[in-house]
Image 1 (tube, rainbow over the protein chains, first blue to last red):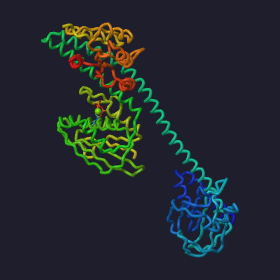
Image 2 (image 1 turned 120 degrees about the vertical axis):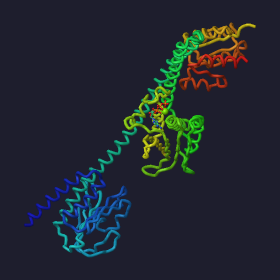
Image 3 (image 1 turned 90 degrees about the vertical axis):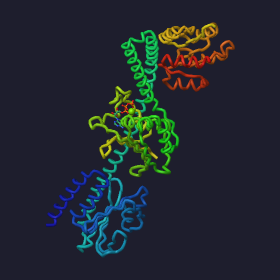
Image 4 (image 1 turned 180 degrees about the vertical axis):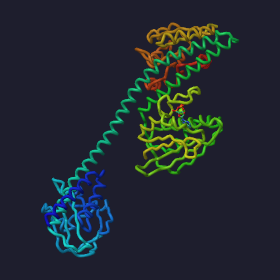
Length: 412
Length: 124
Ligand SMILES: Nc1ncnc2c1ncn2[C@@H]1O[C@H](COP(=O)(O)OP(=O)(O)OP(=O)(O)O)[C@@H](O)[C@H]1O
Ligand SMILES: [Mg+2]
């Protein structure tokens, strides 16, 4: 009978450990462990504490009470000496201790009953990483040496899994950091190449363009005034030269994003400066500018000229798409989700961006304004600048379906 | 009155020749072109231009260095200089900053009307 019981419990332990090994994070592992430990091994309460970096302290307890409610106190940090049993386990490097008749306490330390109580070290094979305690507060069934054995086994299974998951999480975090740094390095290297290439190509192309333009001007003087077709042909050539030159300028702007001069700036002021630079277009197309600026916005470390360029590009895109007038709304605000960010939203009341091209707008040379002087580098450059600032940019259609919303985030 | 003289210094021969064609076509200017910096300095002294168009990035001696030499020489010291360059890189921007600022700059490609406008303004 006792043997059967023992076997059954072993099977349960095995099942629990299988299930725990599938939990995705340390946190989930801990919650699930106390939950399953209590319910499947048949105790009334179970909780865990973990040894701090300073081994004299324990932190981050997870517990499940007699009603099955999970409690989680990741901030709590207490001296290990406060609990004589834990202190004894720690001192003797023991595995577990059964206390036959002691006051049973609740989470706040208040005695809520009397009975037996097991504390087991959570061993990871090398050291004690925490403590697990369990009791039968409600059932009043005394805990036995058998129970102690199981709790000890359970605690050490849990300890191994705990260390494994922690290592896994640390590895993953280290990998993510590495990946991020590598991406930045690759990006920087790419920009370096693009930069070198761009100025080389630009120089080589600008000279021929200069010759062509002078040639066009020369021929324009030679062609008879009434030869309209020839003049039209020359005009087209002139426009083509301008276009080619604009593309080169864009490429250069793009490549110059490598070198940034960071200073502390008030984003509202940067926006005002950028607005001033597009005031001609704003007037010409009867754009109403609505400013919803957050006052006393925290300063951000940015390259002022490049940041201005970002806003100019976005403003011009908005204005380009409201040739019959419209509203340009600029909102600044801060967020605290994730990290502290200083943000700006820019909205227009133009036609919006067709869904099928929304994911292309950042592509180099992607433009729907090819005949109208668009190079398709505006947003490419903008994104590159934002990335150099480790900020974020998103372009989306407004919820109301009328116009585009561009959101920028800068690190505080 | 003798025609106004223009010296164009640029390592790109196609460009200097094209400019010559255009400028001489107006019958207002006498044009000399040089595609090499040392020769340009000699030309500046011998030809005595009323204005010099100077490229910045050139093999050997760049536009900034040419300007320096021109300014050292009493014969050429007072000749107005206009930079005519494909401002494309920080190299050019840097050499412009390094002591050449204050001189007018035209960037390639430049239209002929802009060019003549600049000449008229400089010679006035
Ligand atoms: N506010 C906007 N409303 C509608 N479409 C937009 C808006 N902003 C960008 N787009 C779309 O994204 C494309 C790419 O924009 P991007 O700024 O990169 O290039 P462009 O504006 O076409 O050219 P350039 O910036 O050289 O003038 C645009 O051609 C347009 O189709
Ligand atoms: Mg644009």
